[in-house]
Length: 448
Image (cartoon, rainbow, N blue to C red; front, top):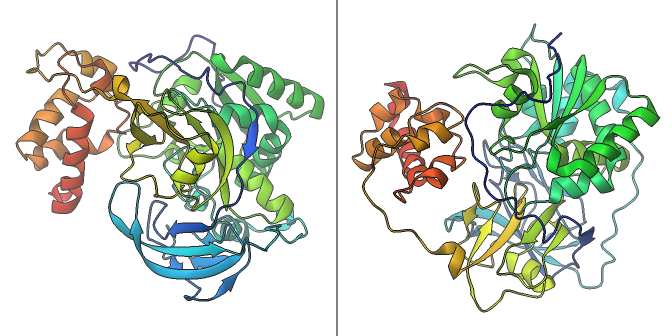
């Protein structure tokens, strides 16, 4: 049995950016109204894109399957509304590229209520049946990576999970959707935890929550004690970024370093985000597939910050309109958090399964620092939680030496941005590494 940690245990390196959650941390979750058009990209999860199962002109019901998995490492898509399929064609993705998508026009006269379905008897499902249900529900990692959840539960023969870890760290500045979810739906969190624990046959569940969410820690501990969940423990964690990264969270909780090239399951651990585990509970309780998610809308450039339940495919423009729109001083909108999120190419791009936040910045936050030559101070290396040399990787990327980047473990970089945040010379280190990683994949340098 892996020993539970003392309060002082934490991962090495990392940074301490300002939390900046005061705009939304006390705001209850609201539901946005339905809008007229929705765009569902087929590749909004890691792995193979989904394949459409509907045709242009076909009427669909809210919650209906509209795309099936394209491979095992892939997942389904379901309609977020009752309406008509208007197009299956390339549409703008948040990164600016065109991607095949299903566009649905909502029926203005439909109630948009989900048809009542009986709960699913998850306890009677075999391991393979449970995995298939998770895949068919379209559930992915809700922390931002959007990795198909069923793949984490498909363990090789002979592999055993000792610890199921629930990631409640939410360490990115501005984001509060996981925090609010733990506060407002602790019963669903614990029910999802118990479903996953039993199906994984895990010995222990550890919910890691940073101590700046003391109210969430308190309510979860009270629920666990009241409901007598003997296998679940809540562990308070010191506030540090990027503690929400799987390997960092494991190191903080158990003092275990997941070796290079290996996954958490290789050390007997599976990690799920709080939002993912609630999606599992909702699916088995009501048959609700993943057709909506909670999004934090915040930042100095938005009029009315909020934590919102948003149907997938909703244009960002409509979400911002519900929040009073953008201020005139707004210069950039980020999808995700400010550290790992991406600036969006247009306000008409859709909310995806991995869209944890919409953050609006003014000129003050987006002003790029003047870039100076590297002074070899080592601050980026001190910040990197994976003990890489970010400065070296960035220099290699600049001169297109991708094979060398691969040899120096560039693919271990989780693109957390701690290096860029720490650089006194204003060098966009993580952006250079991202470019290099893309080229490594294209050129096959990793296998050379």
